[in-house]
Length: 344
Ligand code: NAI
Picture 1 (cartoon, rainbow, N blue to C red):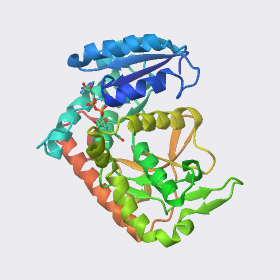
Picture 2: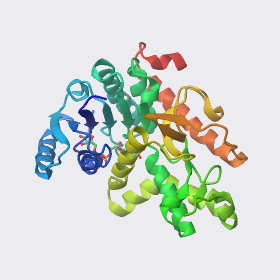
Picture 3: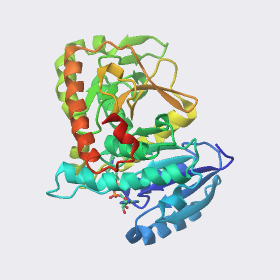
């Protein structure tokens, strides 16, 4: 990365953008590295963006060297080191999932091409906007000069939700709950899995498998826990009257920090939705799927060799099927020149 880290955020004037920007500008993610922010929006939100820029100036963040507000992805992404794609077409009442995918495929085609044209060749891209996995797939397909390893979609919020629920169940700090995994799509078909690799890390470094600590609650882990995490976003909307923004922004910042700055601790994994070019765990190649990942030196690596129960395999198939359906819906809108076609 250059001296000044250039970070572009699309949808910056939205709910998540508003909560995410201070986490980036304050140094929470990149420490005292100087950063420049490029805030990308659609024209109707430019005025709000100008207000956010004023607030950022008023925060006097020492590491923030510049803030650019624009509606042009080419301007926002020029030589960008990190791009966070939060802006997308929202699901409206009565809208079918395929219409949502079509609208977002158009947006993410534009984003992917702009990344390809002007971003740093080492750019790292995190996709937050829904449908996050398939939006990420479209963007990386269109940005054919950028390695697919440089992309991921956010399943880290689901990961944190799962970790928090296990910590509550056990009455321990979230810090002690390790290696829960979100498999698959960032949607209600995801499989939150505490048993395959999850463990409790005690103060003296002892690792106790969650499968033994939760031995009396195995029914809960395979039913209520799963539906609770799968539907958490919907429940937040019901209660808050708006979708998760604070927790989504925090998870976005933590995902970037783990991936690009700190890496994971020895033996620890986090959930990231990444491009499946190797057919990990028998999942079809060519989709973006959430796996347990280790991070080191700015790269993610899918943890291999975990032994999955029959229930887990069944759940993985459900979420894989949904992602293949999304792929097909997106594929119908994509151009013939897209890299995507290689996997069709
Ligand atoms: P929001 O509606 O408050 O903000 C979205 C912003 O994107 C708006 O300001 C809008 O003007 C902008 N936008 C729309 N199209 C754009 C484009 N083509 N280029 C640039 N900006 C554009 O929504 P919120 O709450 O901030 O959520 C953003 C996205 O994140 C949604 O798609 C939501 O479903 C998703 N999300 C994902 C989560 C995850 O864990 N992956 C968790 C929570 C939300």
